Image (cartoon, rainbow, N blue to C red; front, side, top):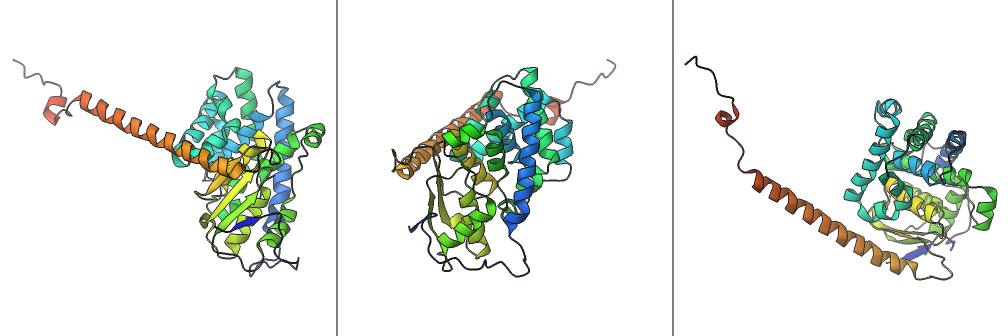
Length: 319
């Protein structure tokens, strides 16, 4: 499998080649919306004055980003009681575990807090963040039926960057790559003769902005996004979890690797991620098999279904 590094340009920079009928970059439309959303989420979270870390508001956004933008979804979510919304977000990841277990597992720092019984203040704060994100148009950015439309922005990366203090970002050498810059870098790396498949690796991915741009570029070039292996790594656990969450939102397919390592210390992180993925899939297969066996046992213990006559209550004949 051919490996392509996002940091290894394959061509000289030229004018952007946009699809016919397009006069602007998709990122130029999505970037401002994602930034506005991040500011609204930040204001809502800080207004709650909660002592919890930023994993909660970032996780709320990541969880909502897994939902489709269907008519009435936003209104229904806004009307839910805070505790009910909390449990709904928990079930979102239960479904994702069934569909793509390795990505749900790698995204755990964004949703494992949902397993606790929340205090009223925690549930209220999560609901406030959810309403702010919904009002800012999160589902329009992340829930469109067309995955290519969902690849136009990285609102999760914008939220994580906005909520992190400047000092924390400097200490971690963390900087969110602007979407339009990511698109230019993707064109540089992939070049005009894009292969039909390969492994694209980003060892300092943040929440996957460069991979997003590369997947979008591949799709516009007529290539099958699922044919590529998308390898993303970041030393920050929340950012690495964001890569996994975004891989689901952007529909990158079954060939995704996510690592959480210092690449200077662990340069072999892709091999480790492949091994970890195999182990997660094996555990998932065992759990599915156990669930099916348990369901079968329950049916056997319940006995045969009653006939219509057996199920009907006896009638009073007046005897």
